Image (cartoon, rainbow, N blue to C red; front, side, top):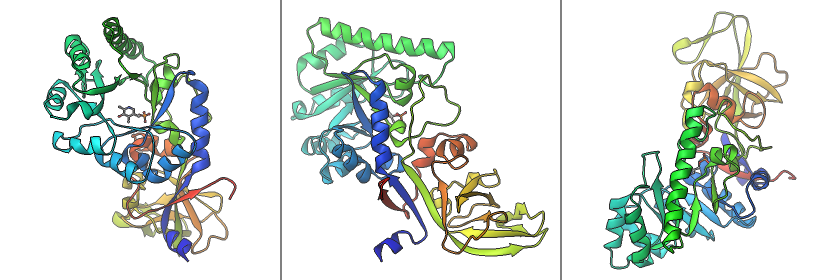
Length: 380
Ligand SMILES: *Cc1c(COP(=O)(O)O)cnc(C)c1O
């Protein structure tokens, strides 16, 4: 009964065995001393924060990163154990939550550091310092060495780590590689300086997914792994030195709602963008763009999978429904399962993201709030 309701019209299946597999694949290329910090921002890249974090805890992952305070609170409210680093800004008025829920806040710049150390309980606040080595988004300027040294020496904050972020580690262009090495050098020089002043800098980290794939020789304390743990790359074209054997964790599924035949010359959907070239069999699928199948895939030759065959999406994708051409697929029935994002060609997230000229974190991070999430294991 419950299961029927969950699979009523559109849902997401989360393959937790694949998540474990991807973690093991990543472990093969990180150095012995380096730990995986699993990045769970934006509802675990659309995969469901709680399902993903519980499984990760079960398989021994004890370090997490989120974008927001609320995401950190959600993890603690669901009894997730380990270190939770907030990568983004938290307003100073809400800093008590960081302390109370044992989270770690990023120090986003010099002004933020100064505001934090003014608080009466500042030395209870666990932080990592973010260092700007060239991305120019957030971070304390890497040239502000005295400021950074004083933050450590004053002990008015509980500084547990220091990190930076690459801005062009996903490229094999000479100027991008040179810039990445410049970022590494700036970060290392700062750490060396601090250590020469007898400071224990705490945990160090700089690599995201492509930082690991393209600079695997680095061995800081953490690699911050986002998209790779979900078993996909950013898209089909981005440069990567290492190819892992990843398995996608997420499948987006729906059902056939209605089937009809249309005559040659008839059109399908809003604005009549699709016109049948002959008599055709078409089916409405009960999923739309608010569920996470982007409207921009309309009229782009996107395919979905039904009865193990690929059917083209035709006409404009609507808010709650879309139409596919099933002329060449025998025995399609009302209620048959349709896979819109999954692990095979055409429908894998990389292909769709590439078609959309975006990257998979955006595609997957937009799964709609009406979807149910179903955890699955390979052997059931
Ligand atoms: C999102 C994010 C990551 C993870 O990026 P992926 O490319 O998905 O691995 C790492 N570090 C920071 C600071 C981030 O914001």
